[in-house]
Length: 474
Image (cartoon, rainbow, N blue to C red; front, side):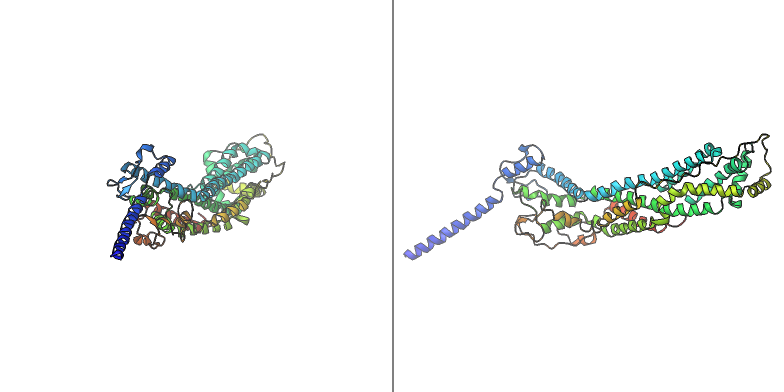
């Protein structure tokens, strides 16, 4: 009888002890809201009095658990906004170096290309003022207009380098004809000037130099033009991915991932790494699809860089352009008598001055363009080499974010972490990258591609096509 009494006492004690233990575990789930209040104030999410002092039933919550909770509906709404900002911040911080690399160099190289064109213009003005003084003033607008067209072309304007070169030499010929070949001639009429201009392409007063100049400028400036366009597109890609418009499903998943643990009284618990991967891959589904096109974009930049070296480099072509213009004028002067005869036959003989005009001044020689102060090609090479290190950036973006210890427990170290429901392990498989794979994502629904990202991908495809024609005449 004593043994039976002892057995009953043990069973009762065991039952009561187990019940008390379970009650204690349930109470420990949300024991106090003090830590939640502290985290709330630290994050500057709102007044401290918005946070309950003790757990309540969360019947009004839309995303987090409706059981005992330290959250109210107003808090959940604040957490929703905070989760979106946190996501944007982490994406931007992860891509900060890439953005700096592309944006800084886009401005730098565009400025340097235009600097080379401006240097060529200055050298050409200097050439005319010191060597071809008789027509220096009249040539000012011609020289400025020609170089301005080259700058516009590099900026992406719908201009033809070939036509710009032809127009330059068409307009230059009447000046050379009147001021250098026939200095006694009075001002030519508009009809006579137009006749001389039309003859330029027939009599070729400057030999084959205009054609050579056109070919060299076309090849070098087309590569520079596509390079500048590609740089600006790179800036657009990074800015677009840094300011994603999040779907409602994504923002809910981010809220659950980042802040629903707060509602359970455990704001210091980090999310599980694999849980993080599913949420991030879902929210970044369209962004991940940029990756192969970004890799091709880098290939384009490397290809363009190779085409900007040697005889067709922008530095070489623009530095030697003033000399080539001078050489072309010298060719015309050497053939002065025959050119004059051809013009007079086609355009009638113009009136001559009665007094002797001064001969063209050719003293002083040609001032050669100074060597550029820095090697632009080496700078471009260095930039593209650093850019190439970002291959795979977008396919690895979710993983890079989730490997940040401050955000989540690293994948594989998930014994004790927030799994979206409780403090424990995350046992759900991780989905693959990309939009198509997200139909298996257990954390959020992804049923529509981001139209802005699709547009960016189309632009990346287009720049690849543009690069294929950068060395062909326009």
